[in-house]
Amino acid sequence: MLTKPSILSPDAHKVLLCHPQWFEVIDEKNVHMQGQKGNIDKAKALLQWEKLVFEYKKVSVEGGLSQVCILPGVEGLEDMVFAANQTFPFLDHSGQKKVIISNMKHPNRQKEVAHYEQFFENEEYEIMHLPKELLFEGMGDLLKIPGQYRCLCGHGFRTAFQTIKHLELLTDYEIIPLELVNPNFYHLDTCITILDKDTVLYTPSAFSEESNQKLKQLFTQCIEVPEKEAAHGFALNMHVITKENKKTVIIQEGNTQTETLLKQLNVSVVPIDTSEYIKSGGSVFCLKMMYY
Image (cartoon, rainbow, N blue to C red; front, side, top):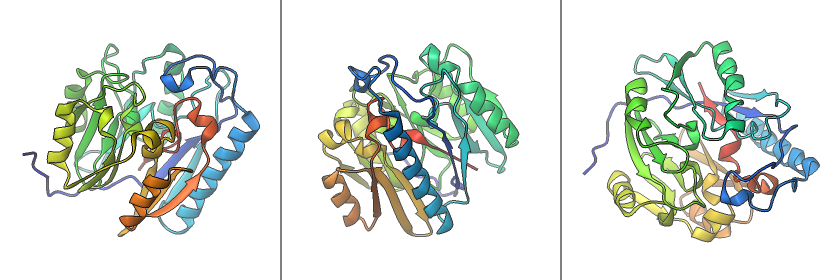
């Protein structure tokens, strides 16, 4: 049985997004991009992104976030808008700001990383690098459990299993490996949402049997989300924002069964349209980075 640590760890309270000026689909890096090359409605994508920013600013005004920051896009970096992947910001046990820089799988995404590294350098983070041969895609695969010095780490498609021991050394967090086996769910943030230290929403088909059992040991409530909504509606790529005991979730619209599950858990649901970004394999969670 996996034990639960009692020491509380602060959670991130600022949100970083990247402007989608140069967003498009130019190749196929995941199954969701198949047949979508050149198929992005850029005007619609901008409106969808602006709506997401509006919702974050609204939450910020209400006290759920302390800051909403926008990073300019860069010409030629069509996927830079997916801000969850290039880094993993965290606080060490003494409260110092640190960030692990990603080693991304695809060459045309590797160029994005330096722009995020510069952002965190300007924010006075200690910059940390992994060995270059170890693949790691930031908060796409490494998810902090709220209030704990503990993370879940997806591996199998974008982040290497061998990376995990290095992440433990750099963070001094406990890192719990979860094997991803379904190409619809190539990042951990596409197939699981950590609602709090006791509760996750997930789709079992994303994980190996061993990893499914591990989740049931770790969390008191493991709530299954329909695979159709997770794979096609990106329901689990939602973003949970917690203020005191109140939770608000921003989620791709149309995921009615998942919305019902959330409302039964007394979560406020904010549906928005991210359909242009889903063509590239990402939704709400992929489009932002939480930091300190």
